[in-house]
Length: 121
Image 1 (cartoon, helix red, strand yellow):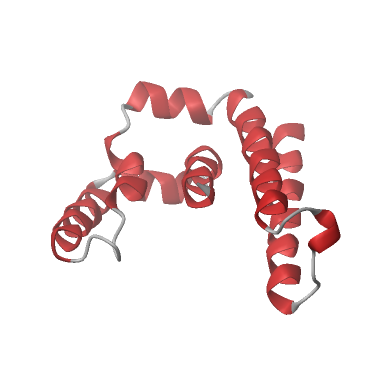
Image 2 (cartoon, one colour; image 1 turned 90 degrees about the vertical axis):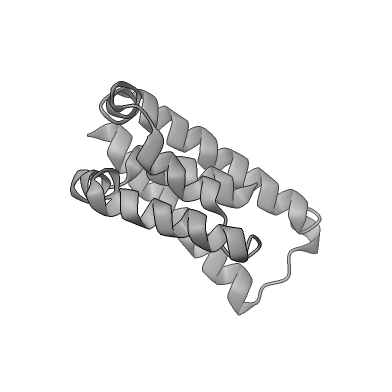
């Protein structure tokens, strides 16, 4: 579930130049190769996550990227991501501070910070 939420987050907040590259001819070839790799290694190459960038209609992609809607969607995704992680570790009282935990929360904090900057601008 967390990976699917992060794909939606990237879809709405990916930089425009990189988003155009992924939606162009390069993205079509990468999607084709990922589908072919998924035929042989279905657990290693989850196709549905990348194909979202390529097959989404232009009017929907532009609508999701040019409004205040993506900023609000990113905030909702981040809240769901934090709640999922807290439930996954068994609550705040069971949180053990280690390098993996610190790195994960540091990344979530950066995502939250850049989402607030995106909504504010």
